[in-house]
Image (cartoon, rainbow, N blue to C red):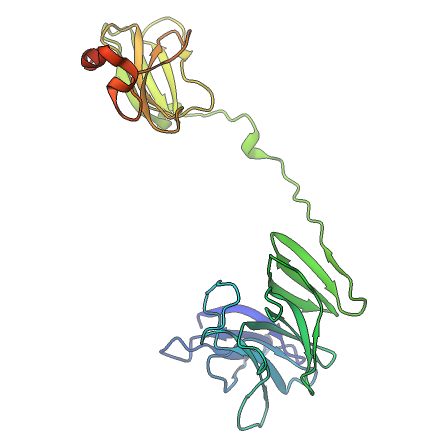
Length: 302
């Protein structure tokens, strides 16, 4: 049915969700489904979403139009979500948030009140209204960072704000951040052995005399002997290299390095000993070589 996220359950245990299955246009419909009988019931609501039911299961509170994806602060445009109600058997749905042109969404019914998120005080906060009189109450008074998604269960509302999960207790009025600790083995920080290192090689070049091979792999540069000898890592930690090759004399390596925050040519000793020498600056040979700029191309072997 191409359903969107589930929003609630009816008192009878049906799942409530929204879907475009019944429309060829972008017109969400509120639908319930009985998990046991699989009977689907479509509510006669156009562009309805975020539905919640009262204790009787006959009155549904929902928003329309649906979420427009606009995160503009204090948005009051024509697609701002508003809260509506519809009672089974009524001819029309009724708009409840007639006092505010801004956003009001995520309705959650509890004990004859509708809890919801709105920016009536310039920041998205938790408010509620009586399902009979419409009398309003503000429950949180956050500033700067908005309350985002919210869900109600057993008289408690959990919501997202500024990277935190928060819990609001309706009965006591307590509002607190829920401490979340993520336990991890930190696999990404462990030593990793690469079983097939050549799979990660991005560039290889042979020494002018055929004695060594310089390999660029995973942003690092290695000099390997063709026959016997010592393998050397010549790249600096924390610097990414590309396309390393031997200089014409075979004593140095020319490579691209991002140590300056831009990829520039550098000269590196094949032994990895000593300081690396910048050959270009801002993509210009003369920027680093001065009078030797005209000789720079001869540094690179073919």
